[in-house]
Image (cartoon, rainbow, N blue to C red; front, side, top):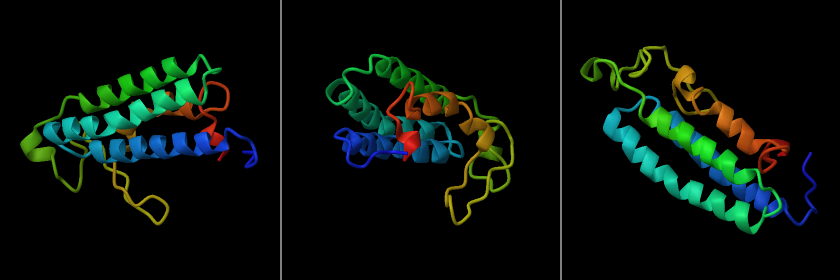
Length: 142
């Protein structure tokens, strides 16, 4: 559990905000065409800059953070570059992911974004690492 009185707590929340933004845009990225994926990738880049600033300015003693952030960014780039199937047939389809053909996860009251769970799995190892208390910002404690 996160100690709300700890001096680093605001920085943990700041990191969480950036990581949530990255995750939400990656979810949307899974069901877009190549152009949309590249657009979302560029949209996400400032969040990585913010995470790097937090790592250097607020978590300077956590030497493992830059490598974890780099890993997540590489995985987001991999997601953006996944080859798409017959894009004219798949993109925008309500039934299938344009990259893997899987049935997208339907939105619910806890997660209102429709996305392809298998494709999103590309970024999950890096995201979990950056969120972790041992190797990341500790946002998993929120």
